Image (cartoon, rainbow, N blue to C red; front, side):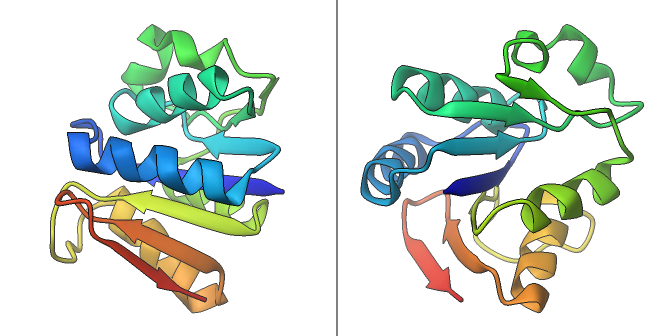
Length: 140
């Protein structure tokens, strides 16, 4: 099973990190897909590697953080870079479940994480939103 993740660049809260461990143990994915951004993507990459989960990386074209992010080159599979919002949809389409780790407790319009959440909802993808306070909301 493939799980895509979308996460804030400010990094996960401690409660989000604990929820991520719990969900990854429960769901037991074979592959974790992320967008090679600093912050949450990097943290989830490291967590997946520690848990023995293979990682697919979908970097964004034109995002400076990809160049400096070692997680960009440490993936088991690295895809060709694409525009951020296109890349986010591709990652969600490639997975059966999406885990979203927003930096806010409320929906934001100009946010890649929230745009990904909206796209996953519109597709009917199984979606877990893990809020900064650790509360998990599931929809499918």
